[in-house]
Image 1 (tube, rainbow, N blue to C red):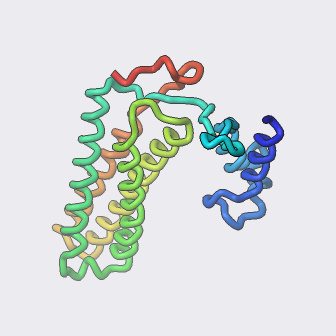
Image 2: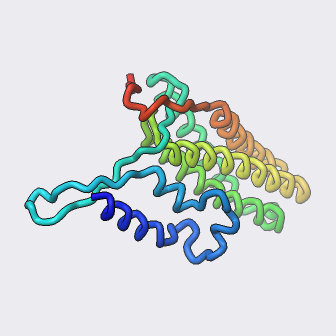
Length: 212
């Protein structure tokens, strides 16, 4: 029933997706294709008879591009483990430094860098959880979102922790500066690892791809 499919898709497209909720200028900022248009263009509505025989039901089937991470399955698992260790170590070192009762930690530069670094680390963990839950074959949007989120948050976190380390040096908090600098290096190591992770577009609908 093409008329029903078209009506449903138009109805869905009339809503703002939560990423741009309330922003009336979305189409002006993204003239080629807005976020919701790109999202719904990756799905195809299929109408089938309801199992009870009364009416129809609409199911949405993904028809967008598929990507795969350019690592063999064992290497991909090791990559996830290495990222978890780096992110965990970064969090532990940060907590040790931030909880120190030291004059350097009261510096506005250190406080600002440390607080903003918390936000960056939250996005790191969100991206890392998404990565760990993903398989080697991923949807277009998921692939680019994971890669961009981890890359951006790790780079930002490294810069903010470096700022905190410099603030400690200005207050002559040598040990605290060393701690924040070490944490910045851990964040930078995460950035380097995710930057080196590449992905490839799968041909067709990706049905020929195997996880093994």
